[in-house]
Amino acid sequence: MDILYLMILCSVSLAAIFLIVFIVYARKGQFEDDESPAVRILFDSGEIKEKDEKGNKDKDEKKIGENNKIEEKSE
Image 1: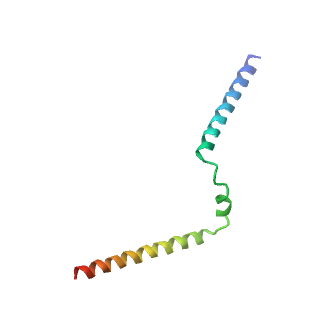
Image 2: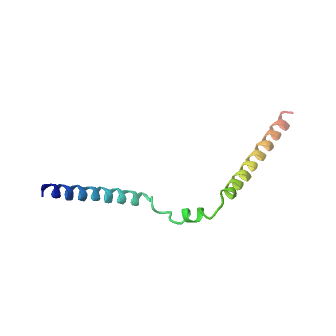
Image 3: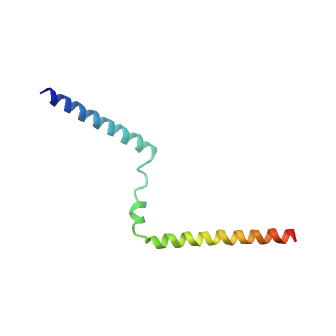
């Protein structure tokens, strides 16, 4: 019978710890964004990579343009 009391005490303590952890993370905003993971699965990984590559091309063009300006100024 003593083990039963010990098991009840352990389970209630563990449940209280989980409840406290949940409340702390809920206040920090961990569970705010519910929609993004559901929408993210609809996109192909190729679409995301294409957007990243386009962004990198824009950065490269800016670098080339900046280099040309630097060369023009030094000449």
